[in-house]
Image (cartoon, rainbow, N blue to C red):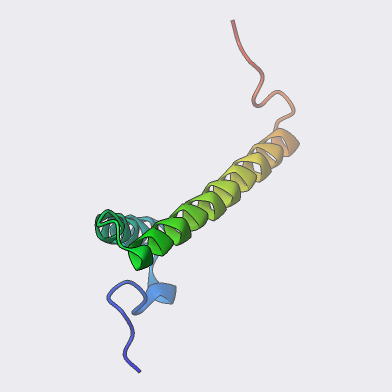
Amino acid sequence: MTQSRFVEELAKLDAQQTRARYAAALSAARARAGTGRWADERLQRMTDSAEAVVLSAVRRAITEVEAALRWVDPNEGEKRP
């Protein structure tokens, strides 16, 4: 079985390359999902679900990074006038 252009060597990519690959896959899916066919509507739902998973993971990561910053410097993240 051959892998797709988006999955091939995915594990070897760094964060920036992974974000770019995700953006390309999402763009391709959105372009295809716009045709209005049933299968394409299902693709749109899957794309929306993937976006929700990514947003949730990124929000969690931000929270964890901020917590680590506060652990290192308790004043980190305080709003300054």
